Image 1 (cartoon, rainbow, N blue to C red):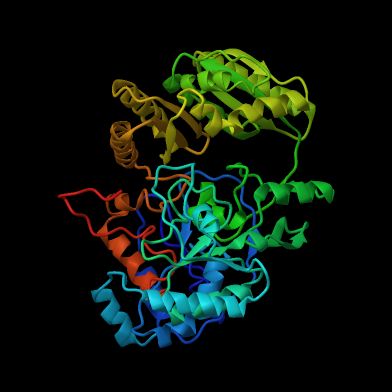
Image 2 (cartoon, rainbow, N blue to C red):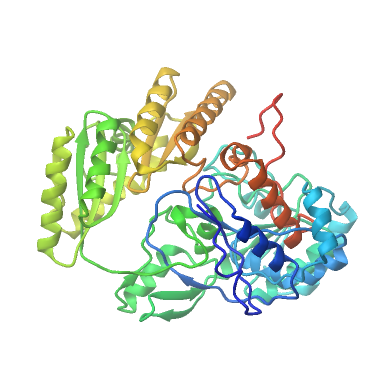
Length: 540
């Protein structure tokens, strides 16, 4: 997808730098000229409250990242502090940035050397930073170094990454608080790691080995303004998407946030990982009547081919989820479902339409299409409660899947391809996992072209087998014109694949822009930006 430069061409002092990628990013000569011009411009000014439009689910792994180039000293870096604060307050990976850009000479130097800083303050520096944080935020509970709190903020049962604890956790309640935290971080050269819903699956909130300041955004969870006529909302990054929808429902506002990630996910975290296509703005969708249907298939290829035809038919589909036979077996084993499911590859459809008649018409069309692809047992919910119960079986994916192999941990990964390539990807992945004897479940937002696999392991040998399978899965997706992640984000686990997916030129440009915004590499170091490929070893 070409670089989006509409904001860069604006004469306004408010410059919004948004790079949108899906597959290989292509930069035209005019785009490069625009970037160069704007990166060497005079001081720009941030929009300190992000006005968010909630977008409906889009295809691919469309992500926004804001990056830049370098300055030499922490004194110069401190001039970028409001930018840094906003970067964190918006979920780290994107936002609106204040940047006092350096001279043309500095930009040229940094283009020639795009490696990122890895030298931070000493233990004494970090101790002084913690003392200053305590004096800056003296109220109880605002700053903690309690070992239990550090463990919570540096470890997750939901992924395979080793724990890595921060040195201190701070709980800001405003953008001004974040500005103060980042000023202290720059003063003592201490890394800063954001933490919101903690549902990340690729290690996004792990601290670097030297430690750092964990900025817990859970208190920045306010809804600031709702613009019903404009279908958008202004909110803080720690707001959970389910709380937003519940608030809109209680207010009687016939709009909702239409994405459907993990129940605890926050708006800031979703922006950070590019969850199903969110860029800088998120749009509210109208609330329409819905219903849920489930249908079984002889194999995942038949199921995904049916999805392509259903989506292209134009009927009212809000979501369509693939759940393979192992997932259906796991759901039965978990015991929380209201029914006993056939243990076959299945599709869960959520229909939407303005009237009951439109919902029934959609159901009839989908039933006919799925039958053509070998679908059987088409079941349509008879009321709202039954529809809710059916959909919750899909939402319990992680815990249901863990039930089929007691004592196991799960390596959850996702990839995404153009929807026309999805049957090859899903079928090839499932066959590969079976051939290697790996216990796994596959679920996915197949209407988007992305799917998730949870690979279960109980020991180091099985972990290595899972690692190799994920590597093959990602490379299979990239070979099919896809991306290494559709929803989970790059984080630690997927950064090694960016050179292969985007090309060296794009990755080095990303690093160059990153250095202008974050010359000391304080903001969540070790994530996203890969080391240069080394053919003698793999860095996942």
